Length: 321
Image 1: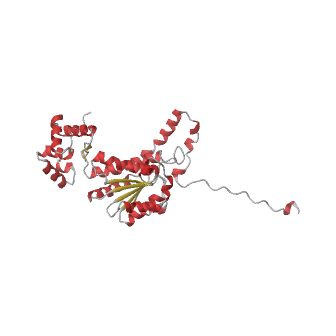
Image 2: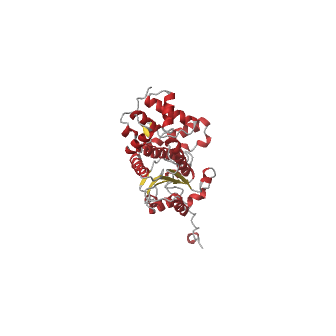
Image 3: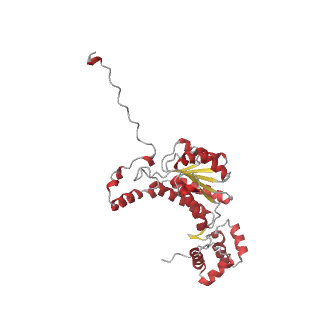
């Protein structure tokens, strides 16, 4: 057989494409030499990447505002906000939920954080838990999700099956659903979210390490959701946190200082007023402003839907620089 008639060798196998459509999984061209960087250079590289996070969140101002309105409606009807996620995303939801009672004086059941794998996964990674959509659905049933609740899925990559399963089941149960992701989610995920908040921060300094920029963006969005909704239901007077519970020395001091600033009372007088208000700042302010007892102050607050400004129309005193 001549060379012209020789059977050509099998072609070399074509390598599978490495490109991932998820922005969170792409390589960052600005940090390809980070493994050779000095400590100071690493700090500069990470800080440079973080600079754009707030801008990415700002692009989502309208869906975030719409989500705040949904959460406010849930709170006003006695329903809940439930965060659900896996890994870093789940931990951030649990963190935000756990900070609401000391900050806003809320019942721990008002904002709930759920992480794939359960509370054990907060300190011990159970990475495979994120791949189970049935488990996500089951946890919605376990938390008795129903109409009026708002369930916010957190999935930096936009694809987490556990989160998709939870949102799918939550919707079937009549809840409103939100999604926080840092890349464009697939249609299957978009289809189960009433509102998508997508702060796309770009590839991470370490490829796929969404505890970095994506985690920071997620924390900012969660901060906005709960802080915005709590403000809307009357947890602040101006920018003062007036619905805190003085459960430790620091918070007791803060409560007294707020009452002193608003009423211009002495420390001792503010402490006495708080004692008559069962340690609660909001009724203490109303009691002083309207010269009423605690029961009347609570009734007036209820009539004003919990908003101090609707009961005490004057603004807090100006900030003294």
